[in-house]
Image 1 (spheres, rainbow, N blue to C red):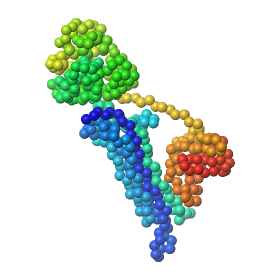
Image 2: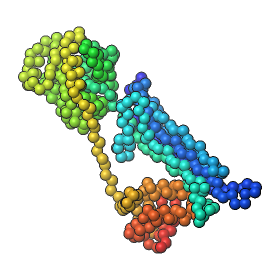
Image 3: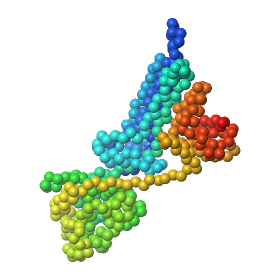
Image 4: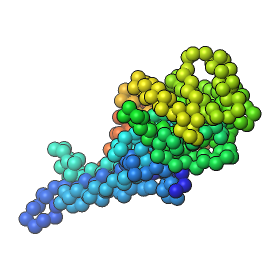
Length: 428
């Protein structure tokens, strides 16, 4: 199966059903009154985490998801049908971002955990809802509320407790294969591992944890070189970092310089990876010069971080580092990630006490455009095909302070105001 850990998709929740204007027309009921029913709610887009998936491959070939619309209201006060929700299943560990703002909408870390990402629109009210003692026969109804739309980025970040880091061909895959039942590809060339591999470690004292063999780092990975962020993304959730060092220096590299280079890439990444506790495994101790290299390495490193000499290929010395890792996990909490917020500037911005915001743009030639989520939804739900509906729309615009805001912005008598595809002239 191909490993896909990042995809971009479009989701759109269903629109609510329209309310209806209707009156009772029964025999022997001379004043039946209004009987228009409400529309049904639109379907929502819900993401559900599952352990039965390990990749976002399905989303690579299907990029657009739209939930059903709610049913329209009917006469005799009958409610329109509610639309069913659309449930999209993703692997545990998936983070869902709003692509346009970069904001995290959901972080699904548990099996069967759900998040409503795009909420379906509520149904519009029928004219029965608008009957009053002053107006017992209203001809007003509402259109259904539009569903929420998003361009999404879905990222799979492995839920491993321990991440193995190191340069290519230092023995990460070999170590994982001997301490777990994972079967990663192992070969004597660089970047044999191009996707992360997971395995469950069972120490001999009964403690267990999840370990990830992550693709080999190179210098500049934090800036995207090599596998770059494709690798670093998966270590964000790890609580302990294990360095695998080729202590034999089989490719002519200096073990201590390798250690410093890997830590530099971890430090340059955005999630404070160097704050996590570390364990160093000195691998390939059967190579010529490995013992001398280990002695020099420890002198340069000091006593701050434990170093465990092993020969992973023949499983020699692998138990002690597993105990040390389990000890660190017992006392190390999860690390929270931080996301940067991006602020947007606007031409005019008004916010009333109930946080209804809108923007006014002068397009020239007496034409002004008004935008804003709340204002646009009022237009989308307004029934503008009757005098009563237009009066109600004008009153709503006045209630949210749009009239005063237009005057402050410089709108003149007779200028055209545009909200979405609806236009009207401004008069005092």
